[in-house]
Amino acid sequence: MLLTTGQAAEELGCAVTTYRRLITAGVLPELSRRGVRVMTPLWVVRALQERPHPSLNRLNVKEVAVLRVDAARPSEDSHQEPIGYAAGLGPDVLLDRLRGWWRCDAASVAAGGVLPVTLSGYVVAVLTGLDRWEKGNGGRHAFPDAVLAGHITDLATPVKHLTAPQQTDRGIADLLLGARLPSQSSGAIAYVSTKSPSAN
Image 1: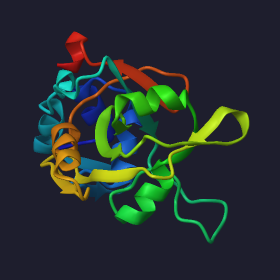
Image 2: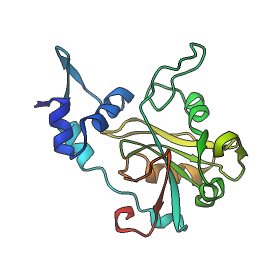
Image 3: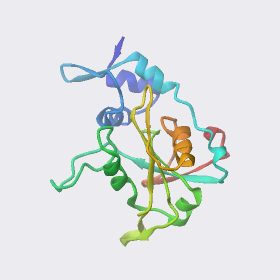
């Protein structure tokens, strides 16, 4: 059975625009087209519904920052890679795009020790190595030593790529990748309690 974008969003209880980000990012398998409509297999939507919430209390911190990103879109500069997340972007490009510059309390981000990256409420990448940061204009910060611990290319299965050199970081990425991690913020960075019911 195939669902339209609107039907899939309704099944998941999210806005059509939220679901469309997952389509645009290329993290959903076996999509097809009927005219201008993108069709999603029912099993993919069911898999998204069943994605667990991560056990954040295993991180031994009170809260972690969450970087909320959009699907990759073309940059105005033809020499730059697309901004945002897309399954087709390589690890080096993803790391370059995700480690800054965004407005945040850099010390709070670093204190969490890990930065889950979410797209439409699902963890699609994980950064570690956040101990050092640089400050830019307008309260923006970057983390030049950040490590891409892992990322997702298929959210439904899921297909995880654990890329960190340290086993501990790969374990954290494996815990978080593909999980549902809702957060609320008016900006790119949100903060999620590791003790809240939704985080366990």
